[in-house]
Length: 69
Image: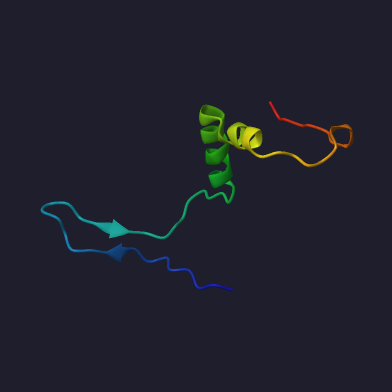
């Protein structure tokens, strides 16, 4: 089990601004990176370009192509 720091971390002030960091985390997700990559790929078409460059040695009649819309 990890020990979580719940106390804010105070830094030196910047002029009249008080600077602090807290470690509450809020709502977190572990798959946000994958969602971002999916959106980037939709815009740029990177996976389709890679697919066209690399030959598929499998016999076409034994493969099923699936693409989520």
